[in-house]
Amino acid sequence: MAETDIGKAAPVTPPRPSVLSLNINSKSALYAAYMPLLRNGGIFIPTTRNYSIGDDVFMLLSLMDDPAKLPIAGTVVWITPAGAQNSKAQGIGVQFKNDESGAEARRRIEGLLGGVMQSGRPTHTI
Image 1 (cartoon, rainbow, N blue to C red):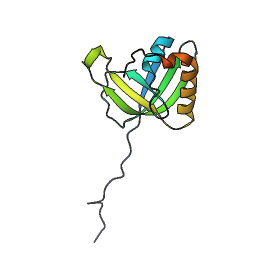
Image 2: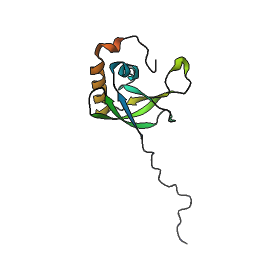
Image 3: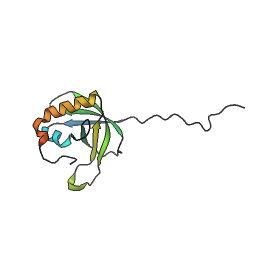
Image 4: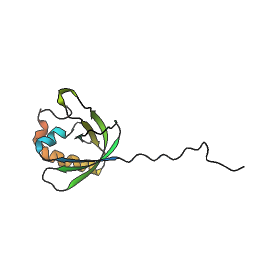
């Protein structure tokens, strides 16, 4: 009797992370998008795409006058749905991975924001 594959589970390939691009052109826009309270830092990305908490994403982040794009891996940890209170923009909050790309993004963002981070102005998430 020949052996068959019936009943054997096929190997599961994890889904590829979604790729997002975000261009931030001003310090006020960076302040509104940055999420410093997340471990490793994070950023809010306006999007109408559907995501779930825990989804992996890969982003290319352009900061102000710097022509280089920062490649950053992250995880969705916040979702603002369409029609949210206080006219908040629809989108996702992405926590930077605990790796060199996340650390570099956090250093660059916090260096650009400097003392503005202590401001009490509202952001996209809080």
